[in-house]
Length: 260
Image (cartoon, rainbow, N blue to C red; front, side, top):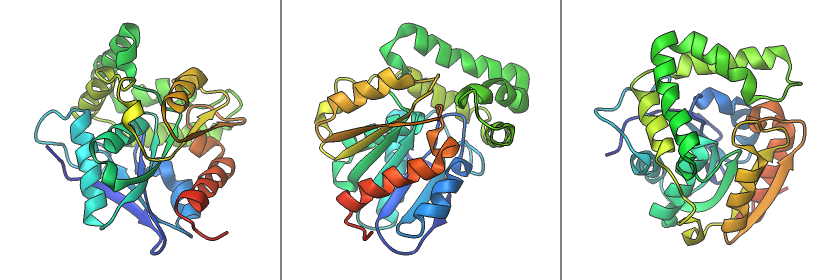
């Protein structure tokens, strides 16, 4: 099953770059990428089904459904895409590359993991978030979670922006479907099937998925480069956008041959 989604777009020339946000976010998370990378690429950032301005899906969605919905966005624009996924979005991007390799020119996987299904405790914690959201509501849920997504040195204005993005993005049942897809995911056995070249990035101070999980991805993918983003937490693309974008641009210059 695929679902309708809202997207934010920037740029009208160059390769297609599809951006998939984390489980507590929306297309707003990619504002720095839309502004900068839109100068040399056609950047499309989605609100995942059941998030922010995207409608609620008709029924539960699994990881394959999210990957197929992303595939539909690529097909609608013709050709193929470079796919940038942050955290949960990275897990979707990896599954997309397995299911639809012809649509994925390359991967940029940031602060992600093979899925929470790799560890029973992590899977249980992921599922428990749904109860938390139902009990306290989006604003309190975001206020409790957002600070941990950034480094301890992150400015207050960024913490507020991340909190607001989450508060406006998450709701049930969409967040519940997403959490279950993440809790059930263990991609370790299929990473070797991915043929697309990949850039794996991780914030130096990521306290959520952590450096180790990103290293697992980089080590398992056949064609990968691994980068630590200094002075960044889990949301490296938002906390250190200049550094993050520079690495993405370097990757696209190699994989898409965009000019310097």
